[in-house]
Image (cartoon, rainbow, N blue to C red; front, side):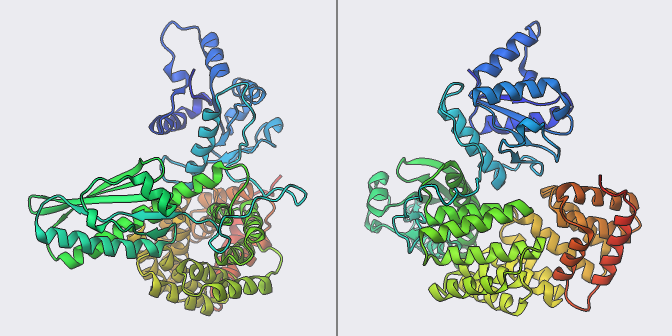
Length: 561
């Protein structure tokens, strides 16, 4: 019995191959028609595999929605309660599947760490672990809207003041060289790494009292139980010629299962500088890229009983998509977090950001006073948490209060200078202030620290605006293309594609971008887009030029049907 049956249109075979290979790397067995052997009866083999599969992944595209084979396969999967669909490009799904929650992976090009992909994998895994056709229905969406008020309330988190955030136990780094100087370096690196991991805020960092047992075997599960740790990190160093090798492992603490490992080879030069640079790099990988991914997946897998932390994570995951529906759901998720833990500072900051972001991007109802209330409340509850300060910065800047945004971002960077998201917040604050050079410098620092951040497409969008303000249209065009490569459905990147293409005389490209805009967010009018331009750019800047270019491109496209 295959884990996954892959249903797609033949013209999408290259995309299907990418999905099949990615699923296999995740440990699933995949059946798709490219695996058929010569001489096999196509219809019979396909039907057997379809009926036996534990999860049926239907790849919706403008071609597959017209295919009677794909529709039939989706219908049977829906009847067997094994359907886990995904959109690989914007399209209108068959009407009977419009109410089936469908993952939007139209932006996905194979990145194993993409948050939307990780959430989708978690969803597929839930179907596979359930056991296949005939099993009880599992809840399909990666992020679902909160239950209505009449539903039973989710149980309160075990520690409302913490929101249920996970613990990460960091074991002392061992030296395998037997040299005293390497023992001392391992101790220094352990201290640096603990300090850097604490800045990222994806887990509360704790250290067991096991320094005297360095190199001795530890009962990791017992340590995890004692310290209530969800994750554990262990590492060792050794000499490789004139270089130093650091091996790092991240584990699920209660199971003792390694979930991520990486080696770092560095020349042995300035040891103090080496300890700091290694700690910064490892903490970024472990915190911002790995634990964040596991926590997003964990919150997505649960069908209820979320903690305040998990509700806040679900809000964060929604804001990664930046469409009108996801930002509204982010607000709802953050409100649910506060219903569980009313004094949870991170949830107050998250709600402020989600509300302000919805206004900034889509012109939602005025919520200035509510945003300010939640910003104040979050900072009053914890003014030294860089995560809260970063969200307060983004909320303030989104509503046009860039001076407050700048102040919060700078304070966050004082407390956590090596967290990429702090530099990103700084760049966003600089935008409305028209400080283009400072904006580019902040984006460069952000990219150097975390070149694969899940919000990279928005960073590239900001970079494009900075280049536009400087009159660097070709550079702006390149940045917008990079943004759209990472998220093809981000309507405001599509808008700036239309603007910059029009100004460069690339009118076909500009008209295509306008059509993409209308498809991505059909409810947004030209006036809505113009208002968003004026909310984005500083006063007395080149906003009028951008508006005029968009008007031209918009007028050149036939009115939307």
